[in-house]
Length: 142
Ligand SMILES: [Zn+2]
Image 1 (cartoon, rainbow, N blue to C red):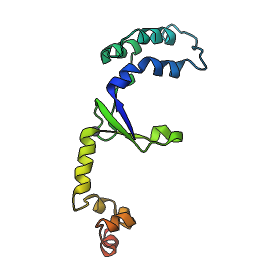
Image 2 (cartoon, protein in one colour; image 1 turned 90 degrees about the horizontal axis):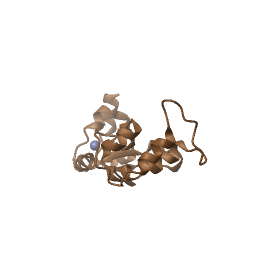
Image 3 (cartoon, rainbow, N blue to C red; image 1 turned 135 degrees about the horizontal axis):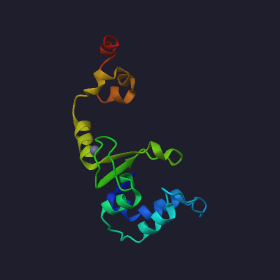
Image 4 (cartoon, rainbow, N blue to C red; image 1 turned 90 degrees about the vertical axis):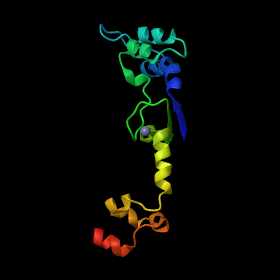
């Protein structure tokens, strides 16, 4: 698991820009509409606690500081990255604290409302152990 904060995204924007655009320590050619090294220098000049709007204004994109929850889609101050896999970083799901709290509440419920919508889950030994529907109900659902 990984804790991601909007503040860390703001503070690391310049370094992440450098790692993204300066391939092998060399900047790509500047064009009339994109000057990555100039953008890097502007980002580097910002304080670590710069307003998010300044980074968006410099890069022209809001996603350099957005900390989007993969469950609710909201931009959050803190998310937790789950399911990290070194070779498939894009598979990590970032979940905000309210959604994590909602997940814990759901996990503590005695019934499993999703079981009827997804009957294949009832085949799982864990679902059966945790009170999943009996096989007779599964055959009716399919
Ligand atoms: Zn969320």
